[in-house]
Length: 266
Length: 266
Image 1 (spheres, each protein chain N blue to C red):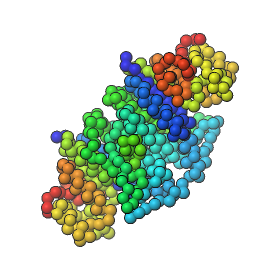
Image 2: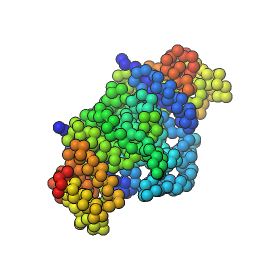
Image 3: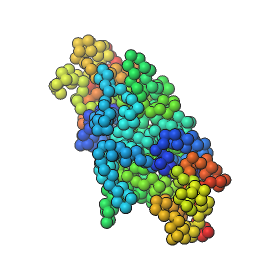
Image 4: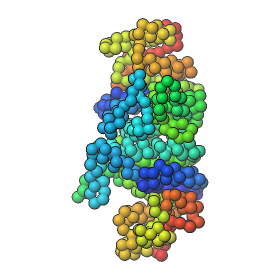
């Protein structure tokens, strides 16, 4: 099978133009087919605030009302075009898309439970068609994916970028040998969040449960790792978590840095 | 040669969700390969104002400083995704792009003359490569194009949507029989701007000069028609100008409505 690298770049790297540029230059060197999924960063919140729209957070998650949706669509799509332009200038044929484009990522609005998250999309991974992804990848094009999807009626939906990366990696693992790399502003999964030298270099699925039980892995890292393990269970060959500015070391799998996840018990 | 319809939809139709929806439903019925280029509408100005950034107009044209550029990129890209999502929901395979994506529309920053327009792009029509357009069109995909381009360094640039439509139509007329349709909130080129029943149904290139001399055609209509006649001189087979909500009548060329341009003297 051909190789495909799916990279998710976290929002905090995007907040700094300098870091984003360094990252993109390194991303350019990744060989073979590749997809870049990006988060939104703080810009959406900043612009909302300036426009007088209060962020409405419940349990640390953003409620996306219609006004907020319009802003995140604008901000994420703007970042998306800026990244695609830079990649093209660097010699990587690249197209900025979101899940709505050529129905790349089918989704549905999250069902109201105790909390109504508003215009938030859950990815319908099983319904993802790979022909349009293949069209782009076979033409040597790197899709840059903004964390927006649409439902069958064309309603745009705010969607978690980690989940998008995981879902795309899963769907494409039927025809590619997929490496999924989550990169952000830390060197990997840390045993001590305050110590960059405490990277856990390998986490088996059994160990993951134990690290959660011990609260060594907590908060925002849990959904990220859940997404990652889900991807592996669905056929993604490798998941690596590490620092965006070490992307070239994460992809060559010499494993000098970052956290490698495995489905082994240990 | 295969048929291709390039439609430019004006900003004022986009400002109303209802009008935009009606337009898109009619656009859906156009047979064969098609490209939709859209303007920006008033939303960019509204958001700029709310963010405290004054629009800086010189001779009726917007000066695009870096802050303004960031806003137009966001706003136009957001509109772009929303249109693409609606087309996909309506059964048209559609991808929202700008000129920066897969280098679809090469451009350069406008040279400073008496006026520095800032981050404004002039399209390099002669350098436009058609292979990436063909990749999308051959796959049955309708590109939806936001009026943003990039230069060779990846700098995004605000670019006139009429010019984009004309340039794309010209470049693709080597391999397609291209109809270019400019549609907006009026029924065509009007002899009397206040009378919707005064549509000039046909304008030859000689007559165009005479209508300009008589000031019957003036202001914003001149660059639009210049773009249109340029396109015809470069091989675009038909240019029609008319009302966005009559798009289905404009494309079938029964010529019940709208203004047809011709290179004939009369």
